[in-house]
Length: 327
Image 1 (tube, rainbow, N blue to C red):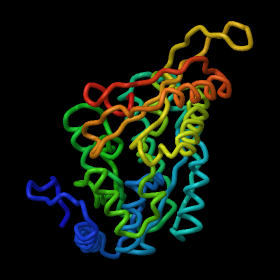
Image 2 (cartoon, rainbow, N blue to C red; image 1 turned 90 degrees about the horizontal axis):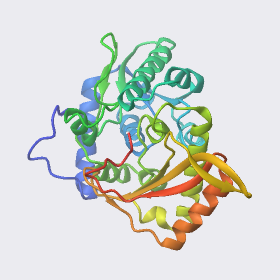
Image 3 (tube, rainbow, N blue to C red; image 1 turned 180 degrees about the vertical axis):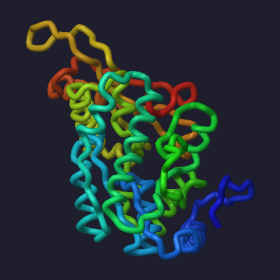
């Protein structure tokens, strides 16, 4: 059955058995909805879209075409990883689209976070439509929408590219098999589908990507500083084993500068903010407690290795009052 709402009597998926029952139900629902039609999937490589891909492959096989769009807002090394895992290891029908200039040109000078989200979401749909025109018989667009996406959109907290904002002339019918699940439930389903732990427990990553971690009007140099600082953070968390203990961690590079010192000379560069939180369902979150020596080590690496950053800040705000992402 395809639900429009999360049923009040829905049993929370906490075990392999419950996950397998959900998978069986959704496979039947996907087959009933899609029939012999073709499906185009927005494959970011994140947990949600990866689980949706695995469900669709199990249900309809080569009726699925996965499209990975590099919008220029991905983390360092991410496009290459998606191509390796899905294109080579899993043998999916994968189309890679480098649309970096297309996205960043449209985002140039746009500072309002909701406008940025809508631009990114609408451009995604346009890119998929362009790819669909090259394929014959595509009628469905699959998305990794999950329940917190829908709740936050309905409450007006923020717009989600997977929840609303689709153009009126969209020709695709949506396929959203995990839209009634919370993030922890999606992970259970992924494990039951046999996806590797590295994929199932991958860091949550928003559809608009680094665009929501680069507050204000996005510039390519500040975006690159964000990408490099994020790569250092992920590397160091991995070395210390914190990537298994902290639910989500990332950096933010806001659109203002501060005075600093580098090599005995005055600098006027951006600060970098570290955000690390623990949560179960992403509806509430608490800041992770990081060792002070570890924070100092991160600060030294980021300020010495990333051009354009001269200061590191640590965000200790819970959700609420702050959302996990900054925009």
